[in-house]
Image (cartoon, rainbow, N blue to C red; front, side, top):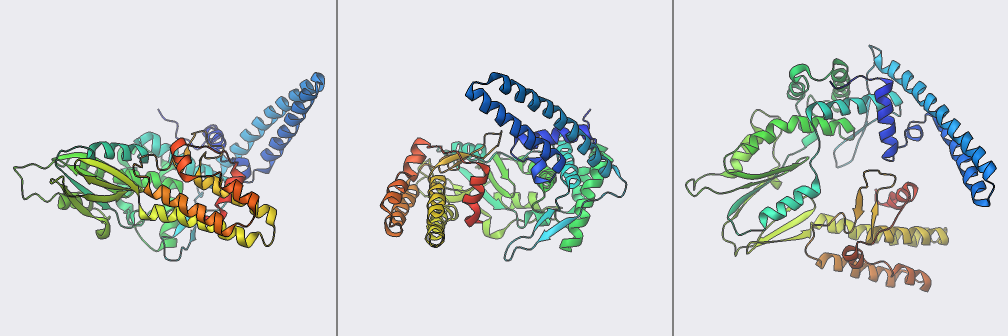
Length: 442
């Protein structure tokens, strides 16, 4: 039986997993007593390395022993802090209060104050939902690869492409409650935590529908909410493939010649909207009847434009994705020009890092899941190189027209979109470096 308790023991699991994934809990949540011991461990560890390197094995051994003793002290302190947090959450009047961030022209975001008890309560509720209901988000890369394979044949098919309007904001609380309360699998405390989040959202948004964007558990709640709809679409006769990534949906039907009047699009829309608070987005909902293979068909999905003709599939970057890369390159040079008037040396350093980041590939800092991103790893299903060549040409133009330093030009010209895509060139960045690199692109 799953241990759903909001206990120090479970919080220690969350603490360790978060740290391994690069979210250093003692720093992010300002747990000063733990952070103090962590810093001392680093100091004595560095001393041990230094004396070991200089050949003083006695002092190196001594400082290593001190470091190990401090590790034990840290473990005890972590457990003590987590016990206090668990006690706070166990109180009958404990509730989570959200903060709303207004986004002009966009969807509002929600966050929580930097309280450790909020962080651990939400993480434990999230963990409980995930394990009890088997909830997890689909893998974007796997969907793209599967779709590419299925489209890359000469069999007739109908593709339905759709998108859910204001997905998070449309999730009905009553329907969601039925999923959460199903078979009473979820513990009362977990349900209470989730209900307090939804109540706070309701007060801030003024709506009886929706889950808060920006709060981690919302992704799990939305997946749970969509489970019945996913099953309904998969059960429609003739469906050979169905995939959904958050609110983006694609369905492939094998047409039945004995049902010439069948309107597949209406069946998918009906499955999504029947007895549901969510609605499809008319601007992004359409069918593609791929029967005459000489006709070119295309649609966008998960950052790619799929182009189908003569039973073959080609993929390009969507216009939005291409424009984003192009804009980021331009902003990097704009920032250099302005910043170099204040601090030329630092301006050169950050420009080189930004171009190395944009043109190359890297691993998310301190992420044990080994998530790779970059010009190749974020676009590995790309078949057409025209846009990569255009990005490269524009990068070289920026270097040659906006950089006056011969040495800086030479250094920047080492970086190349095409070469990094084809050879998967890799660079490493620390979390602080990534933060500085990304700062101008928010």
